Image (cartoon, rainbow over the protein chains, first blue to last red):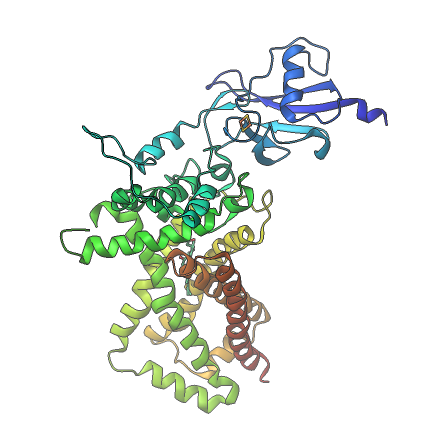
Length: 253
Length: 206
Ligand code: HEM
Ligand code: FES
């Protein structure tokens, strides 16, 4: 099993946001139980490609190393996933690493997920609790709802659901699955519910809930197992009711 | 409403697919099925439909305008997707792709079908009758074209019912979405049978 002693990476690299991408192959020594990031660290330590030429170290992003921050997402052997949580032993060789294509590349495997952060602002993905005086403790949430809401709160804006969605691309304004699920989380919170109609109105805007075409890739790909398609269907219903209220309702919605 | 234009158009597109277009398609296939009982029955039924009061108004508002709107926005929706069913080959993703492919095939089929029947009738070149369809379907190529066109339309409608129910927030739980997937499969089989059976009669007389 001589094969087992080295690992081959084929990495899609890009030197700057405007330059064109190219592929570079690396061979690194095998160790047991490595994740993809351990492989990238090895390349960083000794940036020599498979032809024995010295090159620049490959750039990627990471923070938590335990699949909770979402920074390290990339396309590994064709599937968008977290490089910290993907084990080399479970991958076919050569291992192909590419940056996620939905986002602008900053350098190599580093992408700019800013569009998601902008959309978090559009959908008001927070619960306003600040006032000019102490507002006191908010209403309590029952335990069953809390446990359910916890599952939705696992979203780490990693971008994988946008990457796998056929409707999120440069031809469409669609904000993507994660951004349709989060309003459901904040609307379920007793204090957050006070801004419910504002969040639903944001989903009714162009690029909101109407961008979904039900390919349902998101729920398959989400690394946190968030019931994204259930959320989307629930928001389909809520925005539909909201739009009826907006049109037929009285002056308070 | 003005600010939520995309939402409004997309939900209208979805609704029109079912009411009236979907209902019309089912009605059309069922009425044509009279052919199976015999030439006379078909001609009576077709004449009844063709001589409904206000037929042009009915056709315009129940058929032409809704299909035109659905088709124009539909082609746009097809264009803004980047399909990836090869890479992410889940069932729903394939159905998503098929919904788009059958939309385009259906558009071509409907255009040709309307040209060859309704437009020719309007120009006074032919009359709606059993023998008109028999003539058209005496060509084996046209038989294949009609079968593909009908299957494409019935698939698009059946799978579209599921999409409608999800887009309008009727089906939310994964379980309901799954059960109705089987339900729409049944719809597909049943209306395809009705359509294809009629073609067999016109083409082979059985
Ligand atoms: C007999 C004619 C047709 C019928 C009965 C029909 C019916 C439907 C129905 C019921 C839906 C589901 C709506 C939804 O997904 O929310 C749908 C969706 C769709 N239709 Fe049609 N349709 C027809 C023709 C066409 C044509 C000619 C096109 C043009 C290419 C087209 C393109 C589409 C597309 C792209 C969708 C998916 C929309 C989405 O996912 O948001 N359809 N259709
Ligand atoms: S480094 Fe945080 S999710 Fe991978």
